[in-house]
Amino acid sequence: QVQLVESGGGLVQAGGSLRLSCAASRIIFSSMGWYRQAPGKQRELVAVITTGGSTNYADSVKGRFTISRDNAKNTVLLQMNSLKPEDTAVYYCNAGINVRTFNPGNYWGQGTQVTVSS
Image (cartoon, rainbow, N blue to C red; front, side, top):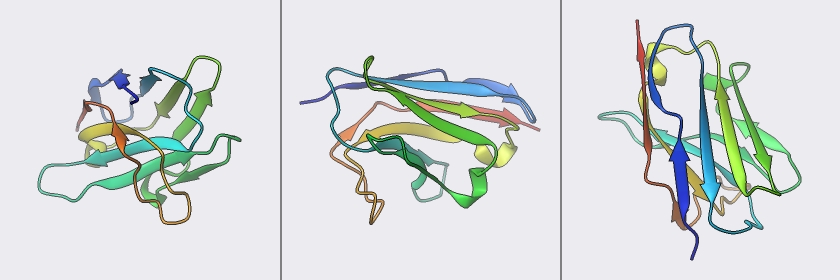
């Protein structure tokens, strides 16, 4: 079993920045990433990073968000800049993402709320 603990969400004005952190309880030998779900909308993949550091982003966040991982610390970070109100959602860390289908793995964090005010 793997526990994923997220932190770093909050309330920010449009144009501001937040950094989300996801700490895993053990080494993760698979791709990790972040999904988000806004009220009334389907969950969507925001960003994914492989064990080798290759990344992929949703079109809506390209150029604004950066995902990174520290394998020695079993953490994944999501730096979010130039935030927009439409980025408002609950953000979930996930481990075991299939980088061909972008289907999530079996391990989820508890979610952290990000709210961007206009």
